[in-house]
Image (cartoon, rainbow, N blue to C red; front, top):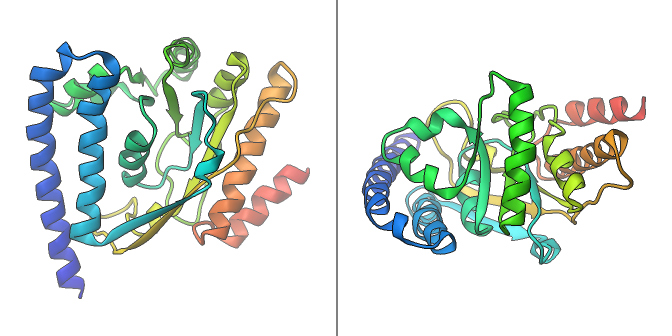
Length: 258
């Protein structure tokens, strides 16, 4: 079975790479002439849905979503757990139009990065955290005013299953300053699409969307409290999904109680 799954993964990556090259090339010719909502659908939604479907039919990666009724009618800041590439594909198609915080180096990738640059991403320099926070605050506010969802992975990078990283307050700060909520999202994609290695496992990914959370008050303390609430909800939900170790959850709860 291991050989079969390995072969499926190879086929998946070949088809994914070819599709990205072809679709991004087409997008560079057509998308610049489309209004932004249509451009976003053309470049991101259709291809990301294809990528998720490719994972489903080639590898056997299904998914189910719970909590969709919690999605507010107004665009807001999405704070999502980061374990793999799968959730990037899924969330980019599920919420539209969406502006994602990403490394600016990605925009230099031929074809893929050039196409991504047309989607109003917030491309930050991770080597300069202070500048990145200022950029997130200014460009994030612009995106929200332009009726875009803003997707932030507050851990800043993919964290292996069983663990959870410290949350940056940038997303909570952006939401609080705009008078909007954060929408927390947990999932267990890393159990089937691990950070390390290239192998993928068949199974059903659970995506859980929490209730919108608003800052209670103003200022740094209210922002820190909102960020902590989102962190605690995501940590507990990750544990409920079997994607966070009990020891790690206990440690986070102990720190919160102090």
